[in-house]
Image (cartoon, rainbow, N blue to C red; front, side, top):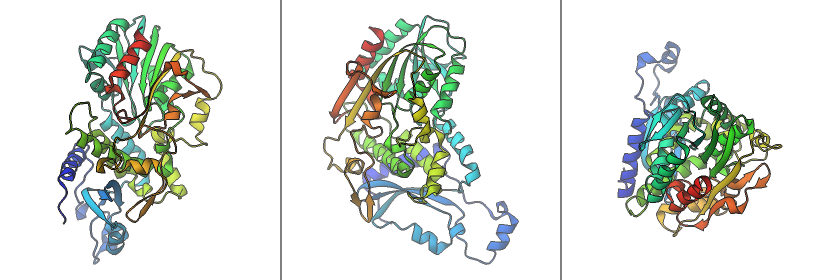
Length: 439
């Protein structure tokens, strides 16, 4: 085996730790665990492993995920052919029992619990988030809603990484009397259902709610606003896919998971440079490897297969964000007028790396340039417009067919600093939140 480059050794160690933490890897089952009929059918044959596997590989400098069905299920020769990727260097692999179709939803729910363990309302107090049964009856409340595959802790960690962010949190605690965070599942449940859970969590509260929502949390908030059952004053949408994101389309979901791995790779390399907040890479690897374990068999079918559309639709939390013309949830979300008459603000960015030729950002070319070739693989672009690596910039400021006024938008423009994973670590974001909510 060819030894890994030193940066990939660190990446492999990080992925191995994530796989163990999320308990994604499984041992080879013993003979007694197999059904009798299977053991009889296999008797006297060379069977190979009974485990499927996921590998993170590097091809032409870019990370990609590869899924391999159990050799015992497809035959050793076919498994070897399927597992060969020209020019691929394996960074790390892990094995597990293949997830049958009737277990996918249950596995997604399990993954949600691992990625977002403290679901429900929590209150920010004395520098920590603590679970609460419901809101205190104050005149005003600030509510924070996190994004995909995440938890509220990440947003507060970013805010507390800068003096401006810490000042905003201190002033917000005094201004509102309570700052709440809503933690919720983001894979197995659609934003519309999250919104129903949010409304239930706020049951009995009669004061005015202001909201800071990030990424997919913006869709949760938008659906909640559509019900119009609460008094809402101001809402700040930060990098929210209000009209969907190109990364969530069924045909591009595999590319999306590849992108998460590459962002994690770039993040852990930037962490050695110092000087500014770098998002932790492990959570990105966690969700990507977790989804590959659950959906790898579906994603390996091929982008043109209707089975892929059906398989991805099972992931309700992602399907609802798909930036396609027939996304019925988004169509209904933006139909008509909303009963809630809040004042809307937005934060957005168009990220471009300072040096796109740097090996850490080579994957970025796949996002923006038409038909890039990686070894023997032709890759279509994911985005056809400015974006922050995850969400189309144009989607971040559109509500009910109209743009949020530019005077209420913190637009970082095209820049080399602000991408989807570090908005709340920017002093400008904290200053904008203070101006929009506290002035």
